[in-house]
Length: 454
Ligand SMILES: Nc1ncnc2c1ncn2[C@@H]1O[C@H](COP(=O)(O)OP(=O)(O)OP(=O)(O)O)[C@@H](O)[C@H]1O
Ligand SMILES: [Mg+2]
Image 1 (tube, rainbow, N blue to C red):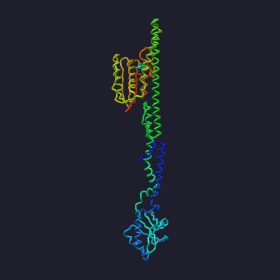
Image 2: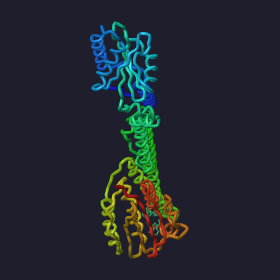
Image 3: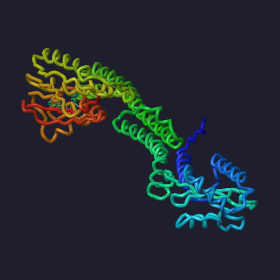
Image 4: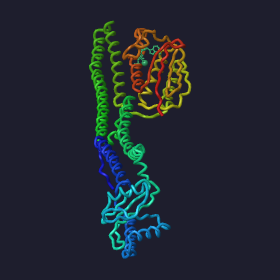
């Protein structure tokens, strides 16, 4: 059978409550209907038996002389082999034979309820079922015959009716699957939505089509959620594209400025001011180039995520670093990379660590120490060097874009001051942390912590 599918949560909750109510009402009605202590029609099987024995009796005793004697005979012949007892009244309801005690009281009560021979009925009194009346003719007299029989096993329903607590329990048990289904229908999409929100919080801006399934209300919430993720993605990409366009556009006037400056030097001969203009323009060009490179690399990078082992991300960076350090007569020491996995954008994660290592190589005197460790779902990378290091009050500032410590600025060495800003950005984007401190080797120590994923 194909039940109509209720797709709205509102409809489902309503239907389930309604069904449960119906079940309870139905159970109570059915229980009272099935109660044998109520007056009921006699089932056809036993009714037929009773009518047959009525006919037998009529046949045997209709022409007898005395009704009372015949009744005594009937009861005597019945006593030994049948569980039935027979009782007779005349059509006015006066007993011709009687019982004693409780059974007689029950019989008296029963004939006030059932005295129509065309509609024989039955009712349970204690452990005695009384049925009748069946019309018979004894000694040419029209009589009503009643039966009584011992009723041994009180039925299960009767026990339930006598104990309302058990009845309640039975109804609760039968409605449990319905309620469980309701709870499941409610909680499953909610949990799905919660997981998706957690993913977004981790920076995984992915659209999940699974969210657009289930009850209508959740389907709509899921669709809105996906739309939100999409629009965040678009906003980020738009901003990065804007940055890329701006830095690209800035380059052309700068190139023209440097060309004009070179021409001026050639025409008028060099001067301290013109040389200064040239160096500053060159520095500006370098900064813009780095900005352009950075924005190009970051466009859409937040949308590309992979699940990769740490060694795959950083072993090349370490090899390159060792080679570069060697070229400068320095040594890069590194312990093995742990085998944990990370989820994220491989380009961002690789360049984050590369920037710090390149700094360490540039500012060190003899040695660079890279240490990987993994504990409690966290990978820690510490990069240290034995250079001059950074003053305590500048340890936080070096992560700002274009920030260069005063000594480096004066020395006019190094890059634009973007490396650490890029690194911090990437690490935070992957739910990690980055901190700078003084190293035991004398220079700078940078600690990067990143969560692993299974
Ligand atoms: N290992 C280090 N030792 C001493 N100073 C450092 C170290 N690493 C970074 N710094 C200081 O922090 C500043 C910022 O570093 P950052 O990597 O952001 O820029 P940069 O190396 O100058 O240029 P870029 O990385 O963009 O080429 C550097 O200019 C330098 O003064
Ligand atoms: Mg750098």
